[in-house]
Amino acid sequence: VQIYELEEHKIETWRELYLQETFKPLVNISPDASLFDAVYSLIKNKIHRLPVIDPVSGNALYILTHKRILKFLQLFMSEMPKPAFMKKNLDELGIGTYHNIAFIHPDTPIIKALNIFVDRRISALPVVDESGKVVDIYSKFDVINLAAEKTYNNLDITVTQALQHRSQYFEGVVKCSMLETLETIVDRIVKAEV
Image 1 (cartoon, rainbow, N blue to C red):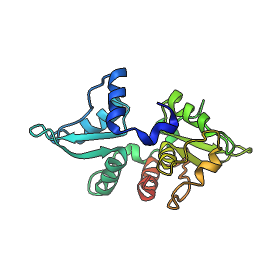
Image 2: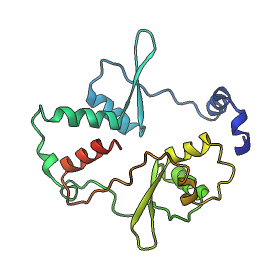
Image 3: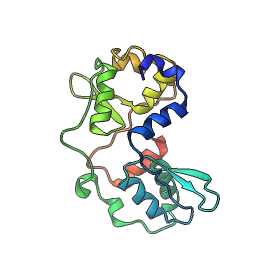
């Protein structure tokens, strides 16, 4: 399927093409499963969305995401004893990626960013200026904006040009330091609705 034919194809066509290449059963969870099981399934299967399926009817009841689970835990954490690790910083916990970080520059062509998404199996890339400072972020969601506006025919445009199509609701990059506590960072992520 050529990129310019995207507007012509239906979801059914894409599904058939996908099923021809590989069949993977839908990863889902029952409404009776624990929150731990849901988090474990998201991580183990390296997915961002987990459908909760009614075992009797087979209907999807809702979709669980990392963001929704994190918000739930943050809201109700005040009513539960806080685990000691929440008061530790990222360095003490050994959380984070500090080497071989994928990034792009403002003048990187979109096609290169798309290739990095696929090759590295990631969903967002920091946009770094000449001095090494993070100035923006380019995510798979931004690619969807290109498709929605039908501006995907020229994949040689730069990240900066593509980000001009982003919704006006973008409020900047949420950052943290390795010396901040996990509790502080979780609060920041939930408040920013990242």
